[in-house]
Each structure stands twice: as structure tokens, then as C-alpha cells.
Image (cartoon, rainbow, N blue to C red; front, side, top):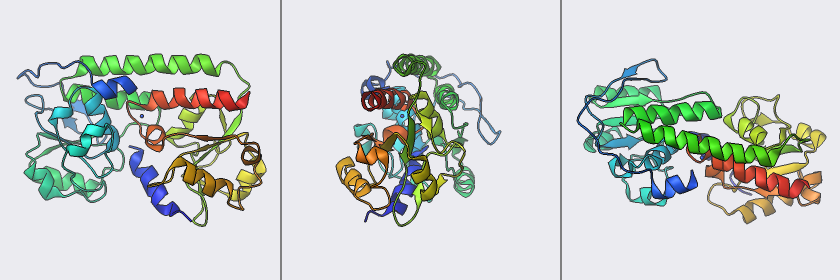
Length: 310
């Protein structure tokens, strides 16, 4: 049995919790001039104003790390979290710890000009970093695609990469338009996203989550649209019996291992989607991070839904 609780924790911290080429190659480099960046109102209502573009940045959220690299700012990233694993080159950046209890000492020692935290920013962590004299921006926008665009634009403003951030958002919108053309006008199959399963309970992309919009944009009807707080009852899953199951690999395992565990579990073996082989696999950090690859997640999911829904 997989440790579903670990999967659930990884889901939450990754929803902070994903375009491909931009992330791989980075946006065109721009010179960092000496002038002050534009002031940004963060999610606490605090105005963040820097005297000059930051030369050293600590990212305490995986989606922020991805945004910084997508904007061509990888060389400025001097700290990350244990969960920041994309793009691959970020593995060489020192970790400040996990999202809940990063090392304030390491952050201060990095001599960062700016620390950026997205979802799950802990108030005590923010206050401790600020007491040490380091500027913190907390960017936690609504869990929608427009909220994602807002985070990207604010990171661009904070780092003197406004033009690159607007270009990235425009590219994402184009990708979403490709997905819209694939999705068409319906009818749309019902779907269930597996965020956690087994003895510890069933968890999914409920209607109050960012992933609900991803599922909708990808051309599915989320059976958990009326549920909240990620939790879903097994009885409802069996009663609604979705056309498609969307399954990301459990933390530390392959999709194949996770799929075998799910389809052979007695609680789910009777589902129509399991019996008829309509269990779609998708990369978890692609789906679950509100960042530059989010439009890619919609497009990939739309393509896979269409392939099995025919």
C-alpha cells in the first residue's frame, strides 16, 4: 500500500501547488538595470518596492521557481525548497528546507535580495525572514488560470522582467486556445482526478481547487465539482462512476506502479473507467503547480481525454 498521506502532502505543497520550451531554454536574457523595479502589492496587501532588480532570489515555492527560470532568471536563484525539482538545473541550487519549516539561517546566509513565497506561505516564516532584514513577497493569487497569469506578471514586475512575463502569459494563452480547439463544444465526458486513495481516504480536485478549472478547460465534467477541501466520499465516486479516471503517480513511484495499485484495489476495481481501460496518466507536478506549465497541463490532458473518449 502506498503512503497516501505523503501523496496528499506533496499535492498540497506542489500546488503552489505548470511553457515547455520556455522553461527548457528560458526567455531571452534582459539586462538588469540599476533603476528601481515597479512596486507590487502582494497577497497580504503589502507593497513590495525594491531599490534595484534583485540579484539574488530565494524561492520558497516550486511554482515560483519555475516562473523564475521561465523568465530567464535561473542564475539569480540562490535558494529553493526540497520540492523545487523543475527545471532539472535547479537541482544544483542549495535547498533551504521544506515549505513549512525552511531554514531562516540558510536564507539569511544566502544574502538574498528577495524571497518569494506562493501558496502555503507560513506567516511565522515570513515574519522571521523579514525580521532578519530580507524582503519577502507573498504571491498567493486565486486558484484560476487568470490567477496564475497574475502571479507570473507580478514576478515579472518584481524582477524587472515585465516584458518577458507578458510574453510568457501570451504564449500560455495561445496554448490554451489550442486546447480549446481540441475540446470543442462537447458533449464532455465525466472525470475524476485521483489526488489520494486507499485506506487514508479519497481525495480529488474539488470545485474549490485550481485543478477543477484545469479539468474543465481540458474538456471534462468534474464529478467532484460540488465538493470542497479536496475530500470526496468513495460512495459518491462509485455512484457517479465517471467516464474517465485521471491518475498522477504517487510520490516517489512511477505511474505504472500507481495505476496497478489503483486498478487492483477492491474499492475501485468495479469502476467503469477501470474496467474499460480509461485511466489516464499525467505528470503530477505538471498538473498540480499553478505556474508556467499550467497551460501545457490543460493541452496534454485535453489530448489524452479526447483519445480515450472516442
